[in-house]
Image (cartoon, rainbow, N blue to C red):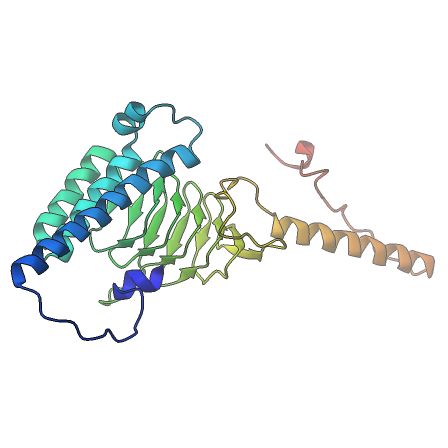
Length: 274
């Protein structure tokens, strides 16, 4: 899909020569094809709301009460204007949509079908961002650049990616297909396909059970591995075992303060001045 977004063609195979068609017919055919493609994309964006938001009830409610959908549809029109060299008009429209929805999508960004922004306030998608099919963003997400150079400087999200609330994906990096970025994570390095990203800066955990394109979108972006916490607990347990072995060898150890570790993820409050 992303190859299609970049090149605008499904294949690089040479086309067989065809007879020339009168310009008016070519223009009319291209216009019909473009309208059909845009209409299909708009319908897929609309259907994504019902697929990924259990609060969506009726056609009319989604049509008038979902700023994420309004922002995506506004982007589709602004992107069409941008591609047809009405760049100022496309930027103006994107700013108007930003004022109405709180969601800023640069019209030059490349976004695939069935794109869903839930709630949406504070979402920013930069100029050279590329987004695949069936991608979901929550409010406060930033796809930002970290360079003043022209050219590719924003992230690429492949198909079926979910980015949790408040997460930041920065720079010209790729988040692989089927991955999930946890809420408030800061992603600054490439993410392999079928991974979960947690923390600041983001720690990448490859899934033990990869997802396929037939699975439902992975919206459990609150279910995250605590990689740092688990590592600290494992080190504490190994240190305790070493101390027991030293005591068994009758080695005198200097008294040390007790290690503080959580009990099933809960820390004891009396150990801290809170």
